[in-house]
Length: 490
Image 1 (cartoon, rainbow, N blue to C red):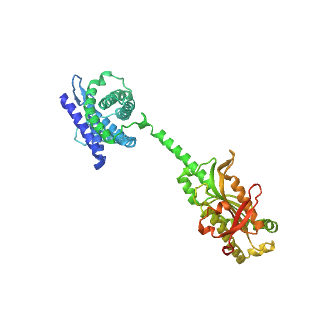
Image 2 (cartoon, rainbow, N blue to C red):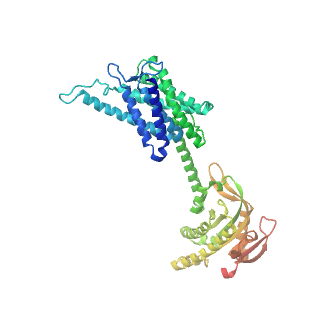
Image 3 (cartoon, rainbow, N blue to C red):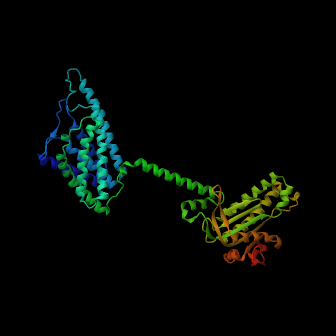
C-alpha cells in the first residue's frame, strides 16, 4: 500500500511537470486544470465528519495519515515550477486563481449544506455526512494555510537556490516541499485557534511524500534550467514584494516624467518640437551643466528700433514685434536652431546646441537669409493692411534688420542659481557674433558672416557672399574678416 501511494504521488507530479512542459504549445489551461483538481481533491480528502472520520492512508513506518498528503505536494510543485520557470507574475496569478477556487468551493459547500440540512420532503437529512460537512473556521484556516504554504516553499527554495546552490537540486526541492508541508500542519490549527498537537504533523509521511514528488520535479526542473542555460536567482522575498516594487516603479516613472517635463519646459520655447523629441528620446545628446561645443551663433536686431519705440504707442510696438518674432523664430526652428534669447528687438539663436548638427554653419546662414526674406514679406503685408503708414510717421521707411553670424567654440549648458537657471551659450563666439551684427551699421549691409563661418559653408551657400573686408572688433586684438550677401540675392 505504501509503495502504491508514493507511486501515485510521483505519477501525479510527473503529470504536472508534463503539462507545464507542453504549456508553451497548448497553453497553461491543462496545467491549471490539473492543479485545480488537485486542490478540489485536497478539500475533499481533508473533510472530517462530526465523529472525526476522515479518508486516510499509510506510508512506511508511519502512523495513519490523512489522504491530503497526496495532493498537497502537487499544488506546491506546480507553484514552484511556475515561479522558477515562468516568473513571479504568473506565480501570483496562479496563487490568486487557486484562492478563487478555494472560495468558490466554500460557496458550493454552503449550497450543499443547505440542501443536506433542509432536504426535499421524504428525503433523509445528510447534514452530518462527510461529503457536505464544513465549518467557517476550517475554511478560513485552510485558505490562510494555503497562502502560507506557498510563501514558505517559494522563499525556502529561492533562499537555498541563492545561498546553497552547491546542494543537489533534488535536496533543495525535497527540503522545501517537506518544510512547507510541515508548516501547513502548524499553520492550520493556529489559524483555527486550536491547540497544536505535534503528533498531527506527520513529519515521517511528509518526508516520504516530499521525496516522491521531489524526484520527478527536480529532474524536470533541472532539465529546463539546463536548456535555458541559467539558474534563476531572485531576491528571497521577490514573490511577496509586489507592492513595494510597484511603488518603486511608479516613483521612478514619476521622476522620469518630471525630468521629461523639465526638459520640455527648458527647451520647448526655444527649439522645434522635432529637436525636443530627439533630446527626450536620446538624452545622451544633452549634457547639462556646461560643455564646450562647436556652434554657430546668430545675432539679429531691428534697424532704427529706438525711433520706433519713441514714436509709436507701446501696444503698437508690441504688436509689430510679435509679428516680426513670429516669422523669424519659425525660420530658426525650421533650421533646427535654438532661439536662446529674445531681448527688446534683438534675437540670439544658436545652431549646434543643444542638439548636435554637423552642418550648423549652413543652417545658421540659411536662417539669416531666410529672416531677411521674412522681413521683406512682412513689409509687404504691412503696406497692404495700413501698418506701413505708422512706420513712416515714425520716420522709418520700412522695417529692416541686421544679422551677424559667427562660428566657434562656446560653453553651453544650464547656468544660474538654485532658484533660477537657463540654458545659455557663453564664450568669445557669442561676443564676436554680436560685434559683427553691429558692424552692419558702419558697412551699410544687412547680413555679415565671419570668415570662420564662411570657410565651412557648402559651395551653394558660399557663392551667395562677397568680400566685405577685414575690420577690427571691439574687445578683440585680431581683426575679423567678414563677408556679406551679393546684391543679386538681396
